[in-house]
Image (cartoon, rainbow, N blue to C red; front, top):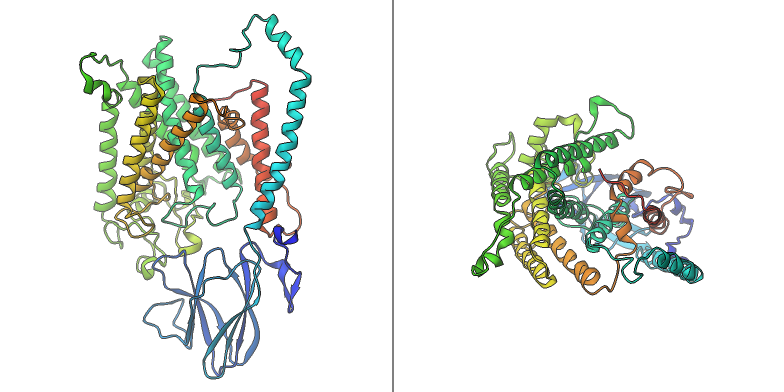
Length: 569
């Protein structure tokens, strides 16, 4: 059973194995060579990068070791001269190692003999980092099973009391739990916020973290999903207010006020470690939500109107949602055009036109200060270097400078993403049958998926516009929006059409999403949400803590739902 929690021996050949952190391993270096040599490494996550110097091997030195981060596969070169910080492809090496199977808590040997020949071998096998997922899943299933049994017992015990209460109130018990609101919307939002809490706590697997630059990992899907579902709810909310004879003037004021509150709360959360105004980060998740909600809400309020389609005009009935969205569609086309013209047309000092890379040592370190190309440059001009995010994911792989993945320029296509969500909401209001709604959502998902795939070349790195969450690229918008359309279609069919599932427990989280987001950010380092035991250096214990934190916030949402307490801005 110990293997299922990443157990490793405390010591191995004099090495302290417990001092290793998650995704770390030892490389033991031995040199019988007569002169100093230099070890260079290259992470597979670093695309088109040179090798980076990591260690000097002294002559006739037999017991040196190096701690490796093995979250991503690594390549090595051993060179008999110091070529500087980076080693490029034109440098001749004594030997290269292309076996990329280094893993957590392993011990590996590199021996350089007197003739300059290298021998690479495994001294201690690594642990299996995926057993903890199974272990935590079993523990969680057992706990959920016990709670479910207890809940069923409680309901059975109090059933007669509940039945008598409902009967005395004159409410038909068969309709007491029904409501007009689509459950799939709150469930979708709840899934997004729960997943956001989980990845913000650290999934501790490379595929649950944000992609270093290009690509799409689990964490990259969460925020665009949350933005998109916000867009879905905008036309529903506006239509509801109009039906209650609320004037457009008052609707606009509410949109302005809500956007201001979202931006202000996000700004306050950025000061959680101390409000140092000289280097306070201006933008962030809630700030981008506020900006996108402001533009989309005002636009739909301006253009919203009841369009009456004559029964004999069949083609207009089929495209009624697009006819309603014709004003917003012009804004979408305009924003996409502005974005594309800027990123490919703006002349960024010391950077190639249309550059979309992370700078640093990307492209063999030719563009050290060009992170994000036009997007990074515009954010730098507007916000300044001290008011943007200082630790982007690319920093640790590409050695780049600060860059804000929720910056100002990226708001352009964020607004486009929310408009696509708004279209999904208009489809709900326009068409009453589930087939009409689902078919249109699925058609849009196919169109956007193909468009995003074509722009990215159906690859991570080789497309015209790669999928990139940091830049909020157009291909990223297309692909993540397609995933949102598909997800909502499935949830709608399962929850609101077939009634196979009521959205429990994620529906409750969706109805108090802002409380959960702010709460998990503010209370992240406090009991009972956060705890630590010992070095916290295995996937098992970190995954257990993340699941505990997420589950506790989910239980908080269920309690608030039980108390009928719902908070929205």
